[in-house]
Image (cartoon, rainbow, N blue to C red; front, side, top):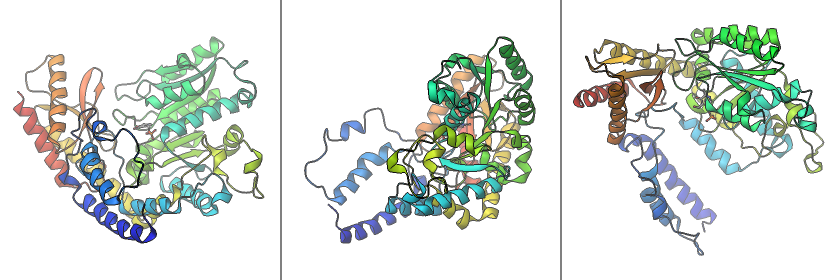
Length: 473
Ligand code: PLP
């Protein structure tokens, strides 16, 4: 087992490995080429009885584990939404692990609680959110959305479901568009509303929620004696970064006194740029809001920023005070265990502090603008190519498009071709992209949000795509 002296030596070696890895990350196949079971079959069936040397463990890490890693920090990673990181964030994670604090209440590390409060204020102001909102870090947007649904449930049942169960509150209804992230459906199921009470509202041409259809659905539910509880509006859907019409939706939720939760998990980072904030119009009427610095704001996973208007409703929903957690400061400070589901909490505010200080707001804005420009440039090329077509208008930095050879009109064949293209490209290991389906059309997605992405990476990806696609027909 490592002693302090060996720890120091090994830690220096590891930092060298980390720096080398990040500098040379492009040398690895972006998407792991492992087959199911490849890694599992190389692992011993049980934990060793005797200590093993760190050099042996590291050797296995490199030989057994690394081939099964997909390289999310590669600038050639264009898949899903990025989960980008940065040097300051990484250094903060090292300190967080070193401190090993468990930040469930103020007393278990006052600095963690107070830094979290200030970091949420910084993020709120940096992204143009209402200054009276209160923020708390959650692990993921899924958890934040569940937290919103539970808080809405309690506020609108006058905290009776928490006390007595659902007996008198069986007809709550939740609304989101057909394009909204699956975490809403998961949250509805966990919160006990039942999937049948999640109403999926149709979308318009641009894949944004049809606000008229929302109002109609709410009115029909009211007429049928049901209780409209919460609307989840998406700012930047997962498939295509479509933006639900927040202002119109907010008017409806105001009129009918319904909780409005905003899911801006990916797009929220874009609002560091004032020119994108037209999408935020109406946000002051929201009751809760989530965005993930762990997606696009150079902060390592996990770190999800959750904001609420009514802090008391949140605390009344989650607060439980067993004797062993009672302290002299209870009620006078932020005990973040009361701001969400879990008791134990990581010290996540530190990496936000490091990122926002080491980058500075100007540099964050500059980088995000650069990512938007990269996508715009790529879309220009896609539109100019006779055998490619955009499938949705560009809203931020996600291009949704497909290969469509001139003259090939059979939609099924076009879909097959594009599916084969994605599989073949990802097999090269040179770039990694994923797909969605838009109205039955198999759609290629390219997200330009990596920390170290340059024009060259996007150009190379486009050349590779064109070459491979054209080689298939
Ligand atoms: N909401 C949207 C719009 C997303 O795109 C995603 C993930 O990509 C999520 C929620 C879920 O995020 P998390 O993994 O933080 O739960």
